[in-house]
Structure formats: C-alpha cells, structure tokens
Length: 463
Ligand code: FES
Ligand code: FE
Image (cartoon, rainbow, N blue to C red):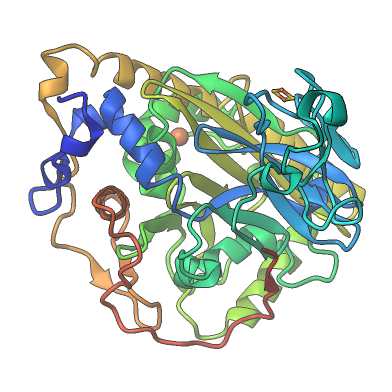
C-alpha cells in the first residue's frame, strides 16, 4: 500500500457491499497517520472522568490519539483539556499521571502555564517566562503562546469527552441512542444521586496490536468465545462460572450503523438479573445487584432494552455496562502497537462490600494479568504480527457473517438487532471508520430520529 496518506482509496480499504476489509488498515503507517488526522482530530473522544479531578487545580493526564493531553479543573469548577506540549519547543509540560497544581512549569526552559482562569484570563495561558525582559526584551506576545486547548469539551454523567473539531456535532447527537446503553455503565443504580466514581488506579498497558482490534472485539464479537474456553471450563474465570461459556445464556447484538457504535447484551425484555456466579458467595452483593436490576427494568418500561454487557463508542472507547462496570480505551501508539487503559467504575454510595466485590472481579478479569483479557491480547498481537508480511497484507479480513439478516429495533434511532453471532456490528464500525477517513463524518444518519422518554440525564457543554 502506498505510503502517502493523501492517496488512500478508502472505498477499496473497506468494501461495505462485499463485507471485507483490507489488512493494510491494521498494519500500514500511511493509514495510521491518516487515522490520526481524519479520525482522532475530529471524533468525540473519551478522555477521563470527573471523579479523577474532583477539586480545583486537580489534573489528570490522558490521551487523544497519539497526543498527550491534560484534563484540568479550574477554580470555577470548569473542566478543560489542554495539549500537553510546551509552545516553546514542545516539551511535555506535565510528566505525572495526575495531581494538583496551579501552574505547569515546563522542565526544559521554564515557561509556566496557568491551569485556571484565576491566574490568567484563559486556562493554559502563558504566565511565566524566565528572563522575559533580558532575553525577550519584553517583546514576546505571551497571549499568543498559551497551551493549545481542545475547543470542544463536554461532560456526560461524570465522563469527560473532547474533540479538536470546533464544528463537531453535539456529544449527545454523536452518541445518539447508544446513550441508553452507556447509561448502564455510568448509572449503576440508574440515576442515583451519588453517581459513579473511578476506582483509584487506572490500569495501563501496551499491546503489540493495532488499536482497532480492541473496539472491534468489544462492539460485538460473540464469535470468539473459544478464546476464553480454558478458564471457563475449569471455572477459574472472573465470573466464577464453570462449563462451556456459550451454553450459559443467549445473547443479542445491537448496533447503530450511522454512528459506528454497538453492543452485546442479553435479549430484549429480560426480567431476570444477570447471573454472576461469583456473587453467590456474598448475599449482600447479590441482593444489591438484584435491586439495581429491578430498578432498571422499572425505569426502562416498555422501551426496547437489552441487559447491557459490553459495547463500543466509536472510535476507541468501550465499556462494560453491568457489574463490574469498566471503561476500556484503546489508544493508538503506532500501526502495530496500542496502549490500553481500563477504568473501574463503582457506585459512589454503594456498601463497601459491593464495591469491593466489583473491584476484585475487575482485577481478576482485566489487563495483562486478568484471567480473561489476557486471552484477547494474545489473539490481537498474533493477528497483527501475522498480517504484516508482504504476502499477508495483500489479503483481506472477512466480515461477511450474518450479512442481510439485521432487523430494525423499533424506537431506537438507526439501530439494528443482529441476533447472537454476526459481524454486523463490526461492519457498522468500519463503515463509520470509512466515513471519517473520507473526511465526511458529520453527515447525519439516514434513519429518522424517534424520540423516547429517557431517565434524567446530565450533560453540559464545558468548553
Ligand atoms: Fe518548554 Fe522551552 S520547551 S520552555
Ligand atoms: Fe474476549
């Protein structure tokens, strides 16, 4: 494949009608660079959670694609997202993961940048220049050299999102009716006043795999259960279940083709709470989650629903919507390397025993040391490696499973339901990927918007 990103033939990379995808999009430098320019500078990206920066002057270092960014909270409570790159020579102005400060002082030559509007009119403003009079003769226009700020920042039920595109659609429109399922992760108790908080300590690790393997897997790959068979057969997996995983219960997958989001869940209108064998040992925990489920069913009423399991918000944010609730982000590092981050969410006001059980489940499941996630990491790494050679990369990946068998979900804008085992969700994801790569990401989906009653939602434009 050509090394020039401008010459990419996006329609050849993703064949929507044929259900195949060129392997080059998982290994080629030119595609990777185009993704950074066309997707990661435009899409809404999950960058963190408000509970990581609860107090004024708190900060949390995150990523937007290959860029390092810093989330800050100013003294007025506003959240900002700043590019973590000094405007003098590009040095990272913050090399910590999180903390509290009123200024970031660059370690290279000492320029200082305000984190809040009290020190300067604008967060990120350049407020200190060593030897300003002697070296710059007082002539440097400090107002022009503040840290770059993301022009669009939005908060949604504690989560923080940002986009570099000033013309991006509103976050709520970007999420569409996928919000219904995102709420499963963010409101463990459906609108409880305490909300969710992130457990201290975000898991971060590198994987020698293209970043898209993770969101593609979480959006709806029910076909890969064979990967996890060993832990399930012997009953040492995080759920505590035993036996063949695919016999446990039927699943269904739903996706939003115009938006590129999708999920795996239990079938609609289920009245039973998800069965998690591990909770059996803790009656208090089991009872708590049973009550959570009943509240959720009552709240959803007759609306289309599944019991959320796991899903993806395009391009790189995935989440578990039932206990333990987690957010996984696949940050691109290079065509063949990603950095995965996992956040564990707990209910701020749940009993300690409940949150402890959720946290322990999270640790048994997630990351390179997790009993389940390590299986996936191995698959993605080998698949990336085996797709790099000159012969291998001429081939295409097959996404033809279940083509033509999706059916609309009444009441959910643009959604289709696909049954248990299908690749419709992945096709929806790569279709959205190609919209962005062609430079046309904000064309609204063709499906008509069908409004529906919703639980109380909190969203505000913080930018
Ligand atoms: Fe930051 Fe020079 S690179 S002050
Ligand atoms: Fe898996």
